[in-house]
Length: 315
Image (cartoon, rainbow, N blue to C red; front, side):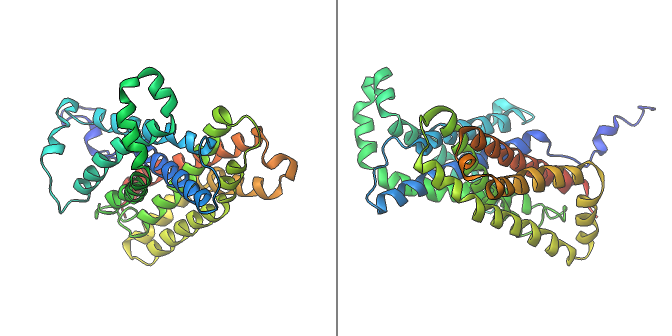
């Protein structure tokens, strides 16, 4: 093709690419993981049960900081001038959803590292004994820190949805259901991530807490499916958005991603597997790993579908 007018890439409707999709996935994974772990901890404490050394909480202490750090690293690398990313930390427009998201992340990220340090206190003190005083203070403030992390994790979970829904030029993205969908899917992938890491690295036998987290997959999957239904039903009553919504789930590559990845792997496989599998399988290591991986892939497909289809089908 004649390049006299420049590269055709400038006309590509997709502005936000896979890096943004993975960042949204990582933010949801971190937030969901922390919500599930802290919620489980409070549930155990309310029943007077011990919470020290629970595999799911250890898993969240790994996933929470690692996932959000990797996500932020990808976001910085995607900038045109990555070494000038600090500018966004110095200039705030408090009418912008992105500014509030940055503020939430600035508090959330250090706190999840504090959470991890408290969970792995013995290991931290083995390599950094000078942190004993700091960790003692953190342990005393643990309940308050957990409440703040829980609130911030809710904010991070919905923030990514609000960020996309603010894009008024894209009818599939510009919907109030998107933040709820992202929070529901964050809880889904957070539960699955915690189960996967706990099963692989921290659980030496069948764990009661892993079983309890596994049980919440039903209501979480139901809420995620409900949000998807509300999203597309709402779009079909939104005039110009109806054509874009219908095309997104019926034609092209992204329709396949939606039905096979989001619906199939993310919802149908985990629910059917947990419902139809023999009881002797349901809490076996292989079963938990398989179902967790299916859920994780489904949520990753959802983030890619929303980002790419949302930008590709405009009217």
